[in-house]
Length: 398
Ligand SMILES: *Cc1c(COP(=O)(O)O)cnc(C)c1O
Image 1: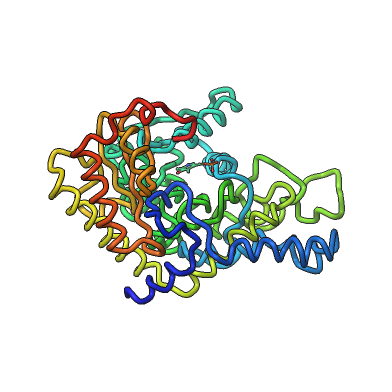
Image 2: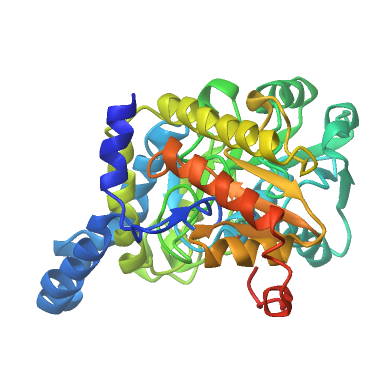
């Protein structure tokens, strides 16, 4: 297995003196990324100009790349499209899900969900003049809160703070039995965890592509709709490219069949192109092997770090099967420690109020990186190297 990952590590463009433990926030580029983007600009856009929409099939890119993502999440062909941001795709999925419920008006989510997801739900409810209700419970109380009054279960599989992973299989099954429509946000899952939407009978899923899919800052998101909802799901943002015949320029809206109706406007062709080289790496490797290796790396980091810093508080689950691919520690001066780590070539990040996050993507991180990062962290803590005023000053993006 190591030889596979020795190979994939060579495919990424990361400074040689850097241990990159923040792929859970922004994946690094592949070495092919700039070549592919430059080729698109120089050989396609500059030469074909507007003809590129037909001759280079730009118009089909959201579906074409959606199919590549479908393979990673256990979904059938033509059930995923790419475009817009995750926040927008979440809005569409929530609207479609709540509209499928005729009587129930409660959306159930949890406090481990990402803020944007919760804000989007609140905004959606506002636009319906509070006809719906958002119920937010603790992650461990979700299963119990699922009753036949709940219309939609809206969760993120992996908690962005702690890395705690929901039991997606169990919760989806319970939802199905109770007639609850499910939406899973796979932002911290896709590209690092095996997922099987079809097998679990998930109704909707969304995710971003700039974390473990390495698509680049602000790369387009994706949305999945289970085939059984293809005819009935509705798109709240009725842009022309979700129309069944956009170039007929009709004044009446007829949705495209299937997941294509979730397209809104002109696809971001350059951004989608930047995503493709990373997706092509996944066609060569087994996502189960990625998961296995990421468990080994996170376990190693936890063990090494605990040996030398027994007082440092791990807030991620101890059991590997209960967490995603990042681990988090609570430390009062965590922000300064993270800034100090970055200055020492270990890139990780911070979440308020005191959380240090370390992500482990085996595609470009190996055991020696893990040991190095843990040693540097230990030194920084032992000698209080973080205790400098300039390291405590917060930058806008943490
Ligand atoms: C990263 C992340 C987002 C970010 O949404 P954008 O619209 O891409 O900014 C939303 N939800 C979750 C769960 C995330 O992890």
